[in-house]
Amino acid sequence: DFDPDGDTLKITSHTNPSSGTLTLNSDGTFTYEPVPDFTGTVSFTYTVCDDADPTPLCDTATVEIQVNQESGNITVANDDAFVTTADIANNNIAGNVLTNDFDPEGHDQTVESNTDPSNGTLNIKPDGTFNYQPKPGFSGQDSFTYQICDSGTPKACDTATAIILVKKFMAPDYTISVITNQTNIVGAGGDIDFVIFIGEGNGFDSNGLNKVEFRISDSQNFQFTYEDSLTKLNDQTVSNADWEHVLEGSLHKFTYIGNGEIFAGNTFSKIGVKAKFVSPDNSRGERPLKATIRGNSGGQVNRSNDNDSDTIKYSNK
Image (tube, rainbow, N blue to C red; front, side, top):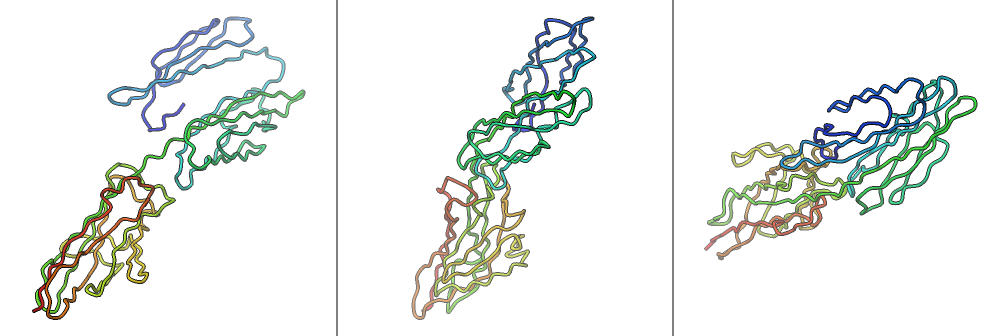
């Protein structure tokens, strides 16, 4: 059993098998004692709940127990469950379906056949290792069945189902702010060193497919200097080393490269840019200093807070 959110699970109730004695603990461990001379299959169901607050989520499953005679050859395949997230980088699942299968006689088990999942691509090998890649945009439950056989004589086979839960990608939401050191320039020009604040407010990581990027437009009035080793500007701690700066024409592009290029949810970063403002001769007026988050950065959807600017006022008369 598993919980996609990582919550703690416990058994809250169960039925009893039709034959034999069952002891099932809240942590999932159990013992079963069949009645003397019984052979065959018995089953029981159990309910498992997580510790989500305020309302725990619960699910029910069935356990089958096969009681065999001492002679004979069997092998057992048990159902499997795996989880991944849709529309993020590296969301393929690598696993082994034989991990929870067993053979009472100690024979080797191999996968001999399988069905294909409906909403992804599967590559499974005889040793049970597999890779599953969901289709782009798919979220929900997918599955495939597989048959294993052992190396006994005569060989024994069994079939199980692997269930794959592809969770829906929850989009991050970024906001950006421009924090300038000086907004009033008198004379030919002056320093306007500034800090860019960019933060994530939804609590979700970037998807790893669309890099987090923001842009600043250059103009004849601004002279920008970017230092990737800068750690402090205007009495604020900055993380320039986490950002890659590229100048394309008059467009300054800043791309997040820290933390394996994954901008973590509920975190922020500050970038320091040294700048000068050059005032036009014999003039006064205003110029905007604007920063914009690139659309779909990190997989975000909301764009209402992707822009911010400060106004530089100048007088050179």
